[in-house]
Length: 330
Image (cartoon, rainbow, N blue to C red):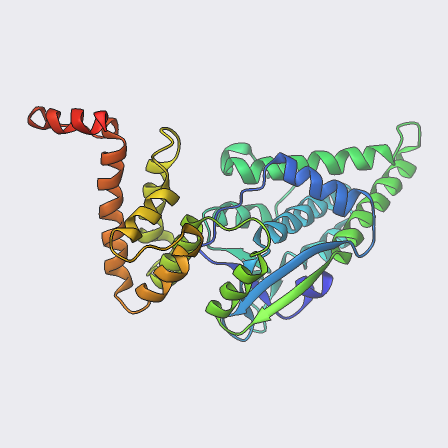
């Protein structure tokens, strides 16, 4: 991990990646397995990236782990600063933010995904009076940062007993923080850099073929948003439309399922294919067509499908109550 974060490259989470989604259980497990046990060189799995230009790489697999590593480094930097160890804080911060060859400061890990602005705000260097507040972040990122901060504080307290003198206690605290820093930088991965984005996703899907399959909805989202580029990352209309569409399919009733709709949508226009093979067929055929038009049709049909399977999700004019009642009956 030290080689990855201190090298000449910068890493970007593309806008079409799913948001940071590790819950408390995942963060706790990572902390205890990869950090607390101080098992030097602990292996945290493969990471797949693709080349965007000479220095920038897009992250296809490893987003969640890289984000957690960044948050741990942020907590370490802030703790060093709180103890007055400015040199150690500076040295830690260079794994978070450093200048490129043109002298422009850049975050080593950047995110164009939903949580991007929050991650960037956390990574900024702050004064002692500028305290992070819960209201400034999305719930998942804030919960992960809180767990990391509390776990780090507990580990420091365990190794810096109150009975010691103030000077001894500070030295013990600094030693523990340095141990945590060394541990995070010693983590090892299988690093898979590929030249093309499509190659990276094909490799990633092959890598995950023996484990839990990615949902068809996640793969289709990646497909659409990787091809429908945003003119302005802060005004990403296609991502906004996808997120709105997904929100309408979440929750009850169980028949209102986005993955199920995608299968039915495709089978309404193509020969039968099993659900586990549907995305591959969709991708092959949609590559030959206008992706923007396909997305428009997909969105329009999703609204119609939702109305059919869940008639109560729509406000019906009185002259169509008979249709509504028939759909309820079905």
